[in-house]
Amino acid sequence: MIAVRDGRAEDVGHLTDLWDQAWAGVPRFAMPPMEAAERVLVAEQIGSGTPVGMAWLRATPAYPMGPVDSLQVDYLVVHAAHHGRGVGRALVSAACADALLQ
Image 1 (cartoon, rainbow, N blue to C red):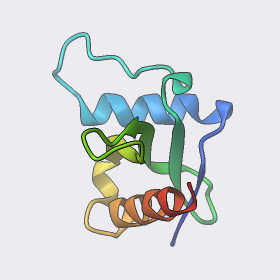
Image 2 (cartoon, rainbow, N blue to C red):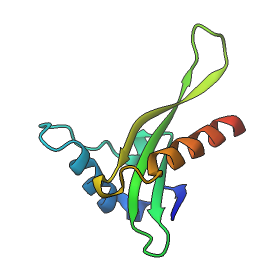
Image 3 (tube, one colour):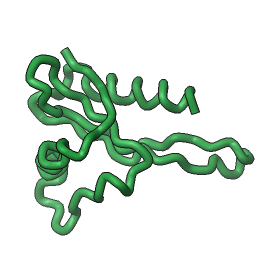
Image 4 (cartoon, helix red, strand yellow):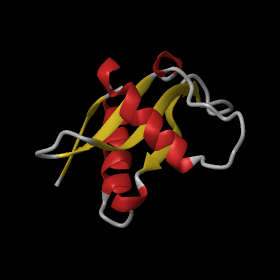
């Protein structure tokens, strides 16, 4: 089972490993600092607490639709061993729920 929560400073090592796995072979594409995101959501495996996915969210103006803002998923990364298990779906669902609260 997967739980989605806000990212924490102690997640950086695990998130960097996820990032490196996802972008293997892409030179000089380092993970941006967590502060660069509006919000970072982390999917963790219940029981172990190990992050297995992440979503970087950023609020953006929804131009040309007017002053209504939108929440954009900049990056969505799921560990390869957890593909097809609903991790990405859980992260996107949590992002959508967050956007509705804004």
